[in-house]
Image (cartoon, rainbow, N blue to C red; front, side, top):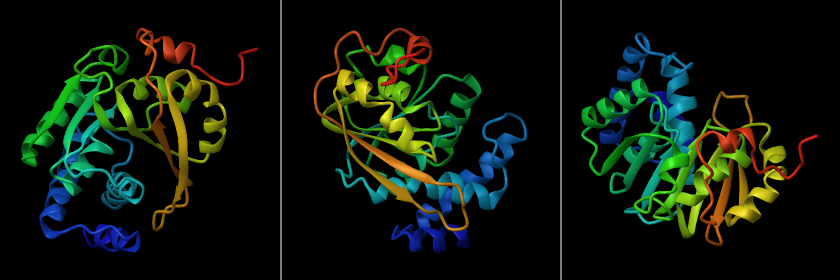
Length: 241
């Protein structure tokens, strides 16, 4: 775990001993479960620490919200970035949405194993939950990592954000192109690009960007569209040929 300590310190992120123990357990469980189920393509311990845990914690470089904020992670997969953020900020109220049953099973297991409180895990799709009044525009922070291209992702995520709330998307080298293609989606869905922050992880050469979106206007009631439509017909700024 020294790698996580050193790397987080270099980024100005503090992780205490109790949190480190949770990350150790999380890593062990992820490796064990991944031998049975395909939870993640990253399986080496050092890579998990850097490309999953530390990458998730980089949210703390741009988010300075309430320690008791209401947070939702859409397409949570094996729990990134939501669970690492919850470990770092234990008072958060966290909701994880995941459509794949085996990943939901792992999320339930790891939340119990780490004794995380105020964590809700939902087996479902963002397109459906985003139309439910119990979730729509109820969150201070919306998270998404490795889910979809940004125009599509905004339709999944912005309906969950309350007015003035924030959506943060982890993106790679294509981030600037995706933001350019999202001008129309932002206008339609009530989002405003606040900033893009380049993040450099120690020992990782791939470009990483945090795209920070502010909820500036209410999302029209007809968004998100029904399941599958945002992927087939994303709200891109460049018309299809």
